Length: 401
Image (cartoon, rainbow, N blue to C red):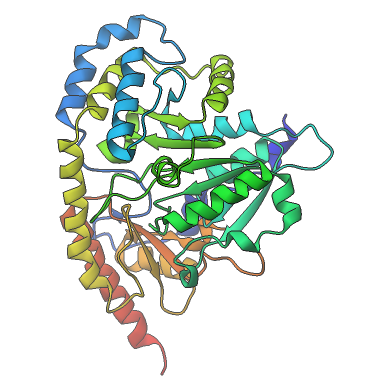
């Protein structure tokens, strides 16, 4: 067996299941889960229609590079969204969701054959695939704590030169999971300067980019354009899962540096990750339509408007820049105990923030927080919020002054 498998940590939901094992929540209260970031809104009818109309595609082997029509649809959406003219043949590559692409891109990019151990830098807390992909590629993960005092953004200048010199890949997530924080142009400018100096690749995970409330979040491609740069050493990853409520389709694309995508295509040809022709047809329909995305965005905005006023009196929580998570600071600071007791007494599941982070430089930046995913229907989200309020008020009343 690959010995690097022994370095992998239990996945957060595996840890959550172990935490809640043995709990006996009130049977009269129906379970409400706000732990997993799995969209629950209906899939768009136009996507379902395209799937059904193209079932003949199941009879053919798809090309790893994807059909020209799909690459054109992705490039067209990228230009409309980011103002960047992408070459569909060289700067766009369909993938089976951003999760699969993040993992395989890391395997493709990391060179662990040298004497010095390569580094993959990521935010902390983080989407756990970043760490697993780095470990299995033979790299050392380097975690940059994202704390409220810095707008939940990493402090790039805190990284020692020795670490930057070994860094081959830096992963950013904007809008962030779990904080919802969005990188500004100054953040990107500093990051590009570091990439120019040390030569590492930037992978920008933007799978939450289309769930926002005011203006569209800045992405890596548009930041490069605004700063007068090309796409050298930059790859953006996006997905239909959150944007279009189709996580089961496993469809997204990567865009950016053509020289990187050329090697990534070679890797994927052997990796065996071509997208079904049927899914490609449905993906074209999704990327070419914005009406369903606007409706989806409005539904999330309505949930935040209904839930936040309920939670603010009992939890330290604010509106995220984007995304569908609330990153809430819990009374007393014990996120694990809070999540377990909430489930046991109110039958509501949330994810302890410390499960999404690692101890780094003397702190776990997820400790004391819970992640609340507003993915269920509005009625369920409001009911869950009301139960959280009742639970918190009961806890407060029971705590000696």
